[in-house]
Amino acid sequence: DSLTIYFSNGTYTTIVIATSGAAPGCVQIGDYHAGGIVFQVDSTCIHGLVVTAYDLNNYGFNTSYYDAISVCNSVKANGYTDWYLPDLLELNSVYTNLGNAGFRLDEWTGSTDPYVRYYWSSTQNPPAGGAWAINFEDGFQQVKSLNNDLRIRAIRAF
Image (cartoon, rainbow, N blue to C red):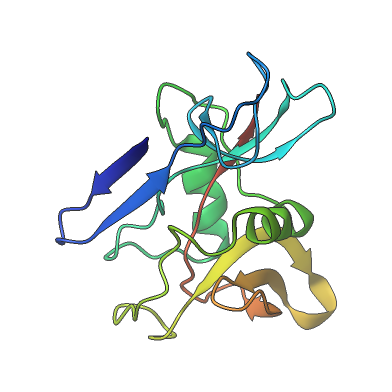
């Protein structure tokens, strides 16, 4: 089974919903559950973390670091309101466990970096005057200026 989300700009993303023969009630990485895509699950396979199935960016909206936090904290997605911007370890877990499937890797001409493939984390790096971000094309982690326009996904616990 799969879920396809169509965007107003004509693009779309398809999410494959896992149907492996796991025990009933056992949530697995890649499942669509609790309003998002499971990217981390505990040993009980009933608690973990999910990421939104789509970017929260509006391409005319400034998604600087502080705007990214605000958007994630105020979003209501799929009936849930407890979303937040992931820290660096959580965002790395998204990349490690889900790869870049469904993440936007195209050019974004409205950004301060038109080839932006980076997603914000909430982890700041004060000595560098920025916050950590991960490039979802290759997993590269880099500190970006707090004023940069980067992509965002929110996460929540279930």
